[in-house]
Structure formats: C-alpha cells, structure tokens
Amino acid sequence: MRLLTREQLRTQVWVALTVLKPYEKRALGVVVEQTRKDVTEDLVLRIMGEPESETVILQPDLVGFPYSRVGVWNVDEPHPHPDMVRPR
Image (cartoon, rainbow, N blue to C red):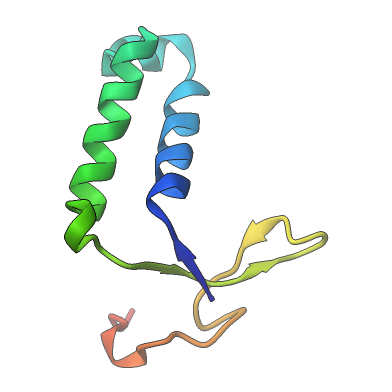
C-alpha cells in the first residue's frame, strides 16, 4: 500500500494536462503553460484540501513487470477498509 503525496498528485495532474491532444487543451482552456500550472494547483487543492488538514489517498502497490502499473484493490491487494467498498 502506498500513500499518495501532494507532490505525486500534482505531478500526475500536470502530466495528464500536458499530454492532452491540442484540441483537448483548447477545449479545456489549458493551452498556455501558466494556465496548466494554475489548473493543476486548483485541482490539487480541491482534491487534497489545505496542507494542514490534507486528505489521505492510499493506492495499492505497483504490480506487473517491472512494477509498471498501480494495482487494483481486492485483486492485487486486499482493500484496507472493505466495509467502505460499494457493492457492484
């Protein structure tokens, strides 16, 4: 089990916005680098909350060869709080 830090989340969001196709960037209004940074900061703040009371995000360990993807709860690793899982 891994704890997702604020910096890791910021990096994942920024990369996701950066690798969008040009027409997707235009549609979202994130063509300019500074705008992408601002949107990234806003999303991280909305997801994690303020640094002094931030949300804890847990991810399963990396799996596959050579640890190429994030695992899936209840498949690769047991869920830490099974009572919080919604039935399908």
